[in-house]
Image (cartoon, rainbow, N blue to C red; front, side, top):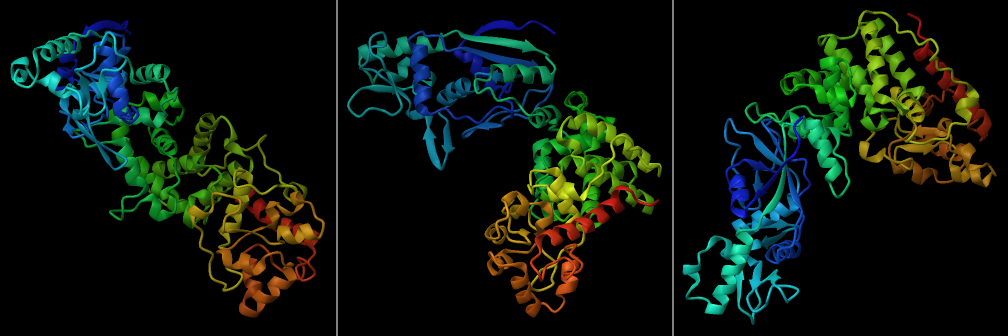
Length: 541
């Protein structure tokens, strides 16, 4: 790795390289957010000879995703065969200077910002007055716009200004065009190192995400591959083709997609492994991995009956499932493989598998998936999940707890039906983020149990949660005892006994509902839940 190279560049040289396409602002840079006032202060500092900081450029032949225009100015492509210089530090400054030089108009928050308005007060003295560069032209004093100063000649200005004003203009023009901008160039650093440099010098201190780095690294204009656009297309392509939003899985984060691709290409998903992936390999593997992801999502929705992604205990679970379907060549799993995949899913969910060391554990689990592909049962010895009734009695319901979400996935498997109409409950990602979701109902209402003197920890347990359709049930139920509100539903729903079986409540008499017996309800429902868990964790093959 070469040492950084210190350079000085004049205004003209710096912006000739932008105009020629050689200096680029990488897409992972933040938006241009400087105000005109900040831009005016920058010019004021240059005129007064103050230091304005160093521009750090990364020179590389890697074609990264970059900003293609600034305001109303379209930037050219990098000349073929040339290295590009990407701005790692100084983006706001260099964009401000370029905006002034080109007279750019930028639209921000619905308002146009015209950089041709930034001007120099010719009645002021730079070495005496605090402020000589103004955001807007003054009405009562002579001025010259910075745009005109940088792009015009003195001969063109003779008729418009006095001799004293022309002398000042000449001085300001020389100070701006003759200013030595400090530039440090780092040459041919690997992209992850260059991004690390960016992170360390970024004044906001915000580290680039792995996805942002991979967007830059995998960009290929000739192959029309833009990872950011491909990801958004996966989420929602407005009906052009199948997408994750249509499937109810639009909360899948970009990191999970990267892991799916990396698992396919090298069976590893750590950050360093993803960064090592070659651009061509990544692009060529994209369709295969994402096709496998869609099959995995369909499998989760149909065979595991998890209708929406917010019910997933971990998005990371999609990585081993995707890996299975990629390696299985699009074939449906055998009955035995389905049993083993179900076992794996609930084992990982109920053991809080991915609460730590996610990347290492996914790599371990890909080996388990390879066993399933060979119709071999993975060995969970030493990692067994054994759940007791006492465990469930005390399990506080939280949508941030993978174990609870695993139980909710079990509830969802039985396609719970509406207490009122016996129609299948519709789940929606937008409703499922919080514990107070429209879809979650405490069968013994917390307000009712509080009236009976029960502590909140006892009422807000996962065994007291049912999945319902909307606020209708909650409005009708309120703080009523189960015996009362269920009588109301019994009059409306003549199939109520069958409805309750879809909530793992098999016998309303035996579950103590008509007697409002909370302890018996928890015990009986707990036994029912444990029986279903056992079928999945310890299947008979």
